[in-house]
Image (cartoon, rainbow, N blue to C red; front, side):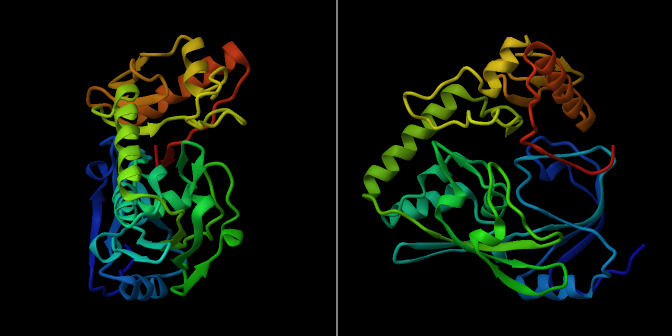
Length: 305
């Protein structure tokens, strides 16, 4: 087994990851590293042999870790990386800051990052995945992001460096996001908070927020992303083509496509990662057979089967 560098945070060998993902599935990581702060992370990556893979993990809200675990050092940021600072119309948040907390704190200061309020997860994941809803995306407001490269160098990345597209960005391989700075439109705090309350109510009425899920399972087919506007067209939304293929409520082992919202894959009854991913693949096949559309996963799947 690889000798791990000395750290001020914690390194745990053979750490089961199931309790760190929203779907509550997955095998162990070779090592789980929780850095104390940026310097700890930078020194660790610099000293870690270059052939050892690393996998940065957020709060596990959009992730299936396969049952065989991850052959890598999984890096999970905590307290040293969740600060939120506001300077004029700029909001800088640590990678571990929760999207919802950032939205609320910005609103307190009269800044509109309300689209983040209903996105499950943390800022690192939001930047990595160009998270968005209601027609707004992280790419629209990002000024810059800070990351530690695999060799330990600390760098600032621009939106051009990240080359954002729908639900993805080009982060350098092995790089770990540590913070992001946003330029936020201004608004009245009470109006912004009212909008977020309304968004949460709408979400809870239409999505299985009480179940173990990882948010939307599949991306909407190209050109049909959700805007939340009244004239939003639903003909080719992921949930609609899943419904049309007869897969609402479909089950495999302990996994189920939600009856409430058919684009939500849920751990209904002690599912394994194989149950969840297998059901997702069954859905993709059924949708392709019935409509000719190939759905693309929005949930990241990692590790060994």
